[in-house]
Image 1 (cartoon, rainbow, N blue to C red):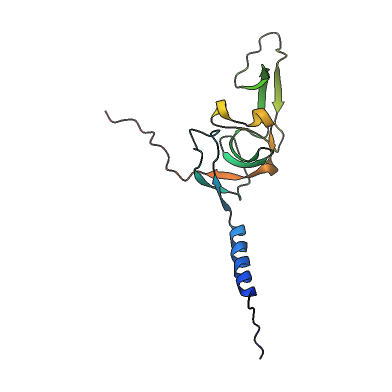
Image 2: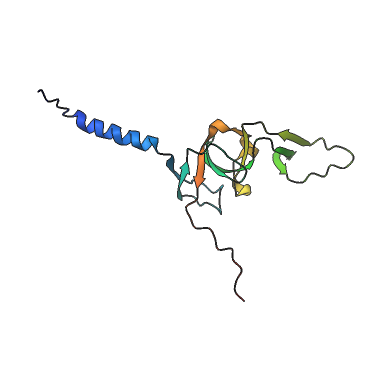
Length: 160
């Protein structure tokens, strides 16, 4: 019986096996960069995101591939949601409550998001490049949902 010797290929095979296992895992590390998600997430914090997540809804914090790079933002509006916007001095403003009155305001635009459209906002609205700048993103651009491993803040009432 003849033995097969892998020689230098043994190390490559091991590395390839480890890489295959790593690629198959649903969780990926993500370092938050910038201040757009403060105070919720600070720049430099390490988190995991679940790339196996397929359903997303408003309130979810997601990792997205965009023209801005790989970014972390919160879904503000999802498929089927109605978004009201106005431009004020060149800035896009999202309107939560719209009181139009008898005459329609020509500066207010109504948009119903399509079945694969998401509107993203940073938690720090004063310092965030988000959908107000680059528009909606498609479901195919969402890489996964951020996993917040930190314990939930204590919201209990103080003892008397």
